[in-house]
Length: 361
Image 1 (cartoon, helix red, strand yellow):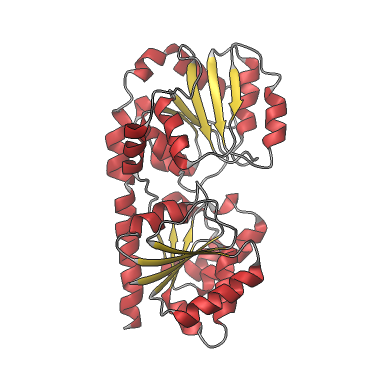
Image 2 (cartoon, helix red, strand yellow; image 1 turned 135 degrees about the vertical axis):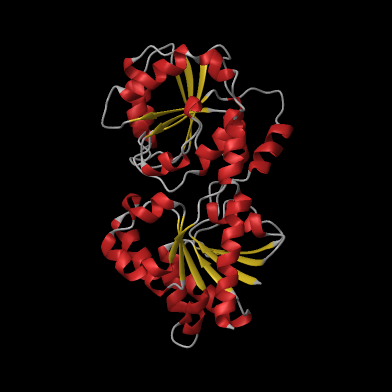
């Protein structure tokens, strides 16, 4: 099987690369083509191309790749790269549309209007559509489902537990949190309005929580969030470390007591799955993707974002039960492996790939 994978970027949090390309690297001959410049070195088993942020460059790169290769499957991970691909195969290679699969990596309501439009166009032309879970599938508006429902199926996101295991084995003695007596909290995600870090910071400003809170990620709200956090007094300590490697993010999860996501919208968040496997107690907003994960009851506290006191109640709970939380880190491990293994996810995608090839024959 020869596969062309199209994505916006290749960075530490890139699911198309981290979950899909690395997951299939020993089984499928893959070419990874990204619109933006790669932030990571591409594995030597994956043929990598980046187009430096130029749509024209990606258009010409795809034309050349299609000319030189007979791809069995084209897996599209974003609307903009999918549209560039469609333009690149027009008009003489439109038969390749029968070999395309599009993955919706988020809930529809989280997408910008521009991306909703681009995704819809590409979904119309794609042979198969997969969503990152049932909640993502159900988030697609009914009017759009009129056009695509028969070729759409949910495949639950998976995470690579072996990567967490490797990081755990290789982690040194150096501590990432400065004070072991404090409650150790990690928040992983882009610093933006959707991820909603400000809701947590507003609660921390009201409380006198003896905690060290580490934010991993960067984004448009970075300066605003940092400025707001300056008014949060001791004993709470707030640290922004920016965007870090996936392995370093996992190291923080392995050391943290609590992983918090009060996001307003998600796909099916890999960081939550990784933090559960790493042993974190989770505080999660009660949105459909988080509810779909449904962590074990004694290892999660769901908060209603419409109830201003709910986040404060969750932090009071973990503060009062910290010893129990620290002594029961392994409860979520088996649950995540059983229900959200990347091997299960890739097995389902392999079936979709093979169905495209069999249809061609």
